[in-house]
Amino acid sequence: EKAGYEHFMMKEICEEPKAIKDTIGPRIKNGRVVLDDIELTEEYVKNIGKIHIVACGTAYHAGVIAKYIIEKTARIPVEVDVASEFRYRDPIVTDKDMAIIISQSGETLDTLFALREAKKKGARVLSIVNVVESTIARESDDVLYTWAGPEIAIASTKAYNAQLCALYLLTLELAYKRGCMSEEQYKNIIEGLQTIPDAIEDILGNKGAIQRFASSHCNVKNIFFIGRGLDYALSMEGSLKLKEVSYIHSEAYAGGELKHGTIALIEDGTLVVCPVTQDDLMDKMISNIKEVKARGATVLAIARESNEQVHKVADEVFTIPDVDPFIAPVAAVTPLQLFAYYMAVVKGCDVDKPRNLTKSVTVE
Ligand code: F6R
Image 1 (cartoon, rainbow, N blue to C red):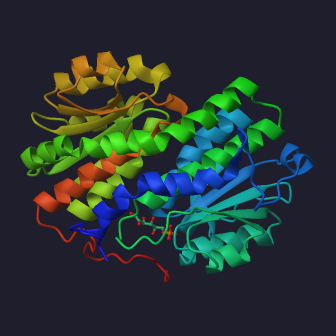
Image 2 (tube, helix red, strand yellow):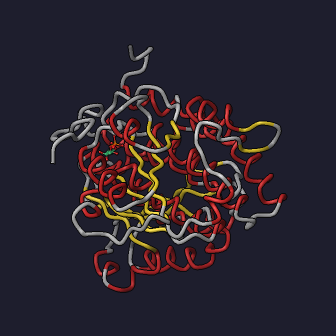
C-alpha cells in the first residue's frame, strides 16, 4: 500500500505534483478557469458582501492564505475563523455573504456545525472538500472538490497543496468576475499554477539536503517560524506540521511582531525557520533575519532561486524554483513538510500516527 515508501506521509508528499495537476487540470480550459461544478454567476459574485472562511488545523491555514489572496485581488472582505470559535461566537453573517468551508475529510464535527451556523444565518456555502460525498460536501450549496486522492497519514500534506490550488482558482474567478484583475495578471497566475507540479518535483529531487539538515538539528527544543504576508500564513502550517509529527515545540510569528515580545526567547543556537518568498516584503524579512541572528539564532530560510539576498544572510537555505510570489505557498510548503517529516524520522517518532491524534475529528 505504501508503494515502496517507508511512510504514507512521504508517499503523500511525493504525490503532490499529481494532486495539483488533478485539481487544476480539468478546471483550466483554453487558458481560462472553468468551474462548471459550482454556480458562481457574475451577478452573485458582484454582490457578495463578505466572505467567511471556516475550517480547522491545516485546512484553516489554507484559509489564511485565501484571505490574503482574495482580499488582494478580488477586493472582497474576508474573515477566517477556526470552526470551534466561529460556531459559538454568534458571528455576524448575512444573506449577502458567502461561506467557504474547507475540510479534507468532510467530516470534522466543528467544521460541519460551523457550516450549519453559516447556512442558518443565510450565507451561501461553498465547500472545498477532498472526500467525495462526505457530510460537509452533501450539506453545502456548492462543492469544489480537491482531487488529492486518499490521504492516509494523519498529518495532512498533499490535501493542503490541493486546497490551495482550489482556492487560487476560486480567487481568479472572483477577481475576474468583479472586474478587479487584468487579462495579463489572470494569464500569469494560470500559467504559474501550471508550473507548480514541476517546481515540486524539483524540490523533491533535492530532499537530501533537507534530510541532512534535519539530522544535524534534531536535538533542538524550540523552533520559531517567522514570515510576512503569505509567508506568515505558510509559517503557521510549517509550525503545525513540525509539532504534530516530531513533537518539537514551535511557534509561528509574523516577522513584524517579533519585537513585541517573542524576540526575548531567541538565544544562542535557537533555530528560526523563515520562508522568504514575497519580493515586496523581502527587505523587511532580511532585517528580521539580521535581528534574530544578532541574538544568536541559526536561520534556515526557504527562498526562491533568484533571491540572492536571502542566501547571503541565512545560515542554510532550502531553495525552491522561481515561481511567481503570489502562488509561491503552493510550492514553498513542500520543504516545510519534508523538514517536519525528516525531523520526526530522525527522532524515531511514529510519523504516520502521531500520539494523541486521529485523522478526522468527529467529536468535540
Ligand atoms: C494537520 C491535520 C489537522 C486537520 C484538521 C482538519 O496535519 O491533519 O489539523 O487539518 O483536523 O481536518 P479536515 O480537513 O479533515 O476537516
